[in-house]
Image (cartoon, rainbow, N blue to C red; front, side, top):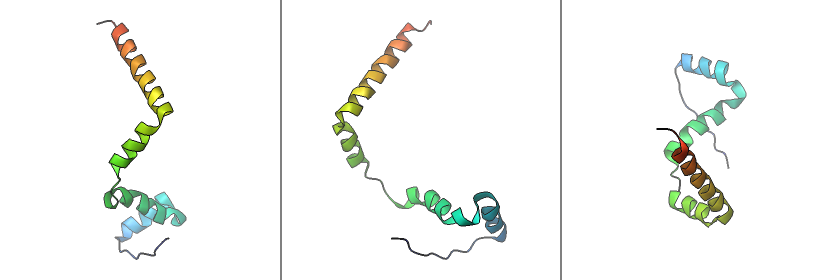
Length: 76
């Protein structure tokens, strides 16, 4: 559900938003900027879900092992 919010900004900021972002995209732009500062991500849950994905974990392990081999082969 979306809610309407009225904010006050300096006139230069207002004009800059219209010129750079575009009138129809200002709300989404502001929401994208603000969201990470006001909503706390549940990182523990996200990590648990990632770890439960066996295919993803296998690919990550394969990538990490390949990277270690690449580094071991580099000239010093």
